[in-house]
Length: 93
Image 1: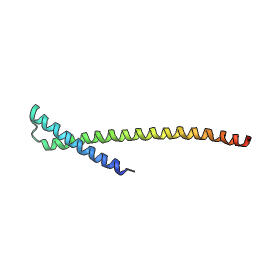
Image 2: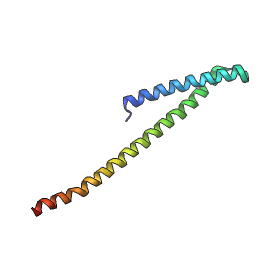
Image 3: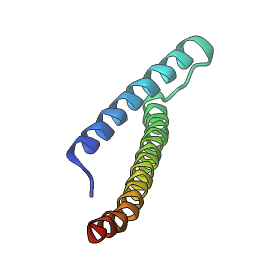
Image 4: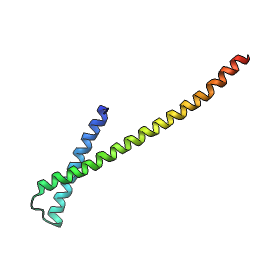
């Protein structure tokens, strides 16, 4: 399930990727080699760049989620290891 903040971040990343691609294609067409149909090139380059950027963002989120799950597992193991010791100490008193 997508969080609203993640969705807004992805939309913002897509807009930035599209703007970057349009700027790069425009600069390439003006200074290096003339492109006869720049609109199609803008759309294709922007879509490819947006896919890459959103894919990297998803990968970052999955790594972060995995790290949090590992930390939670470690904390759970520590708590469960200390729980039996505490009950044994109460029984001995």
